[in-house]
Length: 383
Image 1 (cartoon, helix red, strand yellow):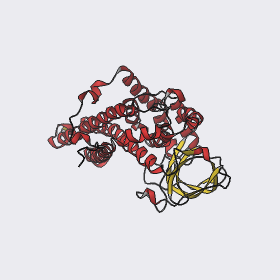
Image 2 (tube, one colour; image 1 turned 180 degrees about the vertical axis):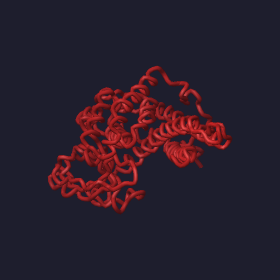
Image 3 (tube, rainbow, N blue to C red; image 1 turned 90 degrees about the vertical axis):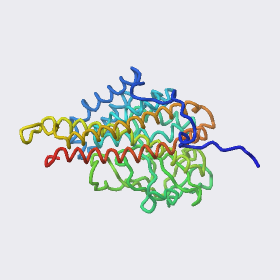
């Protein structure tokens, strides 16, 4: 019997010693990291916050204008290699951008969907021609991307998608038919990363351009929150997509979808760090200003405990997020973007930390839920 054991993918920290050299904490941030964080904060404070009200009313033109401004500052190209018009920064840098964007409210979601799940499929799984054609425009904001996986009848069961792709008789293009639902940025996106089944069975990924005949956008969803972020259905009716717009290979769509979503989960946690910090700042400021029974409410033990618990959970979340960012930097450093095997290399590197990404997402969202609820309680009736 063979004694060879397969290496654990994800969660290896449970059974292996951790190399502390790969662990990143905020104390390890370089001057470049701090400059990126400061640039992001200045952009949000100067370009986005003053226009919050207009953005919340779904002003497409303003949102795109501000996204292009972010592109001018390099905030859209952190994960795009320099060879394709980006900055090619490490994951710690792009994580800092995600964290510091949170004061931008719904606008942060628009940027996040573009730079993450919208652009990264091409970064990690695109051909050289696809990267040269699309990434420079995505890195500047000249083009905006959207990610189209969810359908009316398939959400968590992504592989149950009904959208089809049929190869034409001359082999020149695929004909796509179907619809996607809850697509972030759909109202103004130029490119769509679309998942469809070739011949009704091989789950695959395509780059679809808005200008292709047969592409249409449904009405905006009536959401409870994040109203400034566009969320619409995408309808595909006999859309002819050139074969060169197939991303990676036929039947590899599940590897693209699940690994890109891994990074999306991780970046969601980074946003939760920033939002939790923002909430603590608001709650602490209010507690130090609000007086009851002749004293500031921050001096009451119960309020102090709430603030302590909020800080404790946020500290743990921040540590988790940047440790994971450091792990990604080590794993993705081995990916050769010029290699024909880049898809396999990327999938392997990202999948290595799929468990950590899920832990980040769950703990991050639950921490933010807790922190926001406690912040509301501290504000009392003004919450």
